[in-house]
Image 1 (spheres, rainbow, N blue to C red):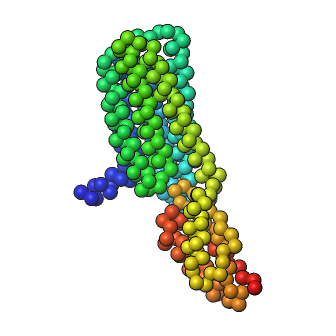
Image 2 (cartoon, rainbow, N blue to C red; image 1 turned 90 degrees about the vertical axis):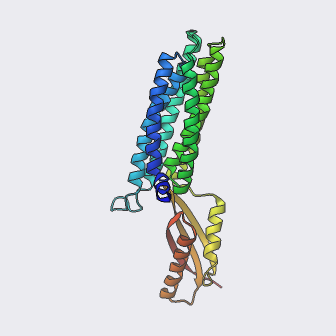
Image 3 (cartoon, rainbow, N blue to C red; image 1 turned 90 degrees about the horizontal axis):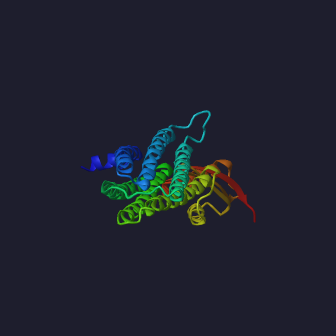
Length: 292
């Protein structure tokens, strides 16, 4: 049983499950939107279609990120994961803008009619499905530290908010206020755009070799300084590569030590940081003599 659970909690498995769920929701929303007469659900149907494209990008990004370093990518392919996450965010943004435009157009054209009750059931089913997917995908993303999977989780979360707004608009439209159905579509748009901007901001930081938070850097400094032979830390730089981090640290040692002894201390620092911090996969140590 534990082996099955382990297989299910991988980035690839979570993304494939998301694809299957989005195919089902796409079909249901198409029927509920066009046959059920819900503008908010038609907007959500387009959202599911773009979700499928985003899922495909995530799956490709995950597989490329696992490739080992080569002559052209000497630090590995980790940022393929981040690029996939960025593409997901752009697709989410495009979805939000389109939904907002289309819904606003419907409001101003005043071509509103009450949706069928089938649309209500589809919207409720979507909320339930996306809530489960969000929790599951977030857990997998946090475990694997995959930016693409975490972006996928945020996409599921925005879908929950979006479908909640759509459901609210559909129900109110059914009791006599049909204009609130496309207004529900505008609500969908707001949450989708806001969520996409947050994801884009975070992934641009990573693609520009952004450093982790100050607390993480300070922990790395203290860990390196905890080695007896290290007399001080003169500089520490860190950058993110996909789900991993690269450390560039300068240590001070006794100036009387030989080059070989300094080299051994550098290896101690390197081994300690990699063993203590699971996110760190590469450490470059510069050895400098401590002046009196």
